[in-house]
Image (cartoon, rainbow, N blue to C red):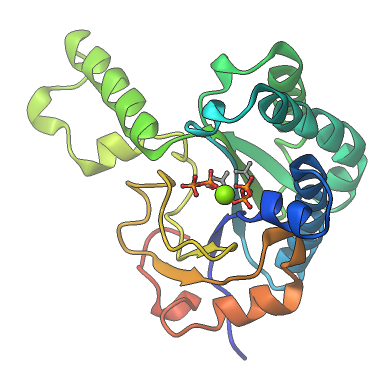
Length: 235
Ligand code: IPE
Ligand code: IPE
Ligand code: MG
């Protein structure tokens, strides 16, 4: 039997174009994306994926029109409130990667509540990358490491890759085995720059709202992404 990769990360792109193509607003596309996300979480559980990272808002996405940014900030508030019982029933542990301090109060609150409520669940880890930027991730880790050095908690000559890793937003997680990008663009858009150094990449033209379990299954069948062939990081 094919064993699934441990950590699958998805750049959920194409929501806006999905909406426009159907004569709807971009926001309707984002809503459809949230619904697809729910199906992809279920599919990941069925496929025995251990960690699913979902890129939902990048540190660059603030430059979008104000109404769209507001919609994207409120979407998780609705989604997480509604889905918490389901997360508990499915034993899902939720983590957030990104600069949460800069988020609106209501978004920050729903994230911390969900993380706290699901912290003892030991099924799949669903990691939302929200207000996430790969450069910001590395930069904030470097700031913390400098503080440790200044406070003499660690000597400069002992600062190595493992030390940096311990301060990343994703410190609790193994690196992704595969990064999937939907929506047709073939770029990384500031996602998990440190963490994807050994990851496989998979691109599909399908807009994220149309992404399905079958397509996910196809993506992770790519040689080199199965658990026994992957990068040997702690599981
Ligand atoms: C991805 O879809 C979701 C976010 C970035 C929030 P887009 O909103 O980028 O959709 P397209 O790429 O414009 O179609
Ligand atoms: C990447 O998509 C970010 C998310 C999916 C959250 P974007 O649509 O924001 O990226 P660019 O603008 O194509 O690089
Ligand atoms: Mg896009």
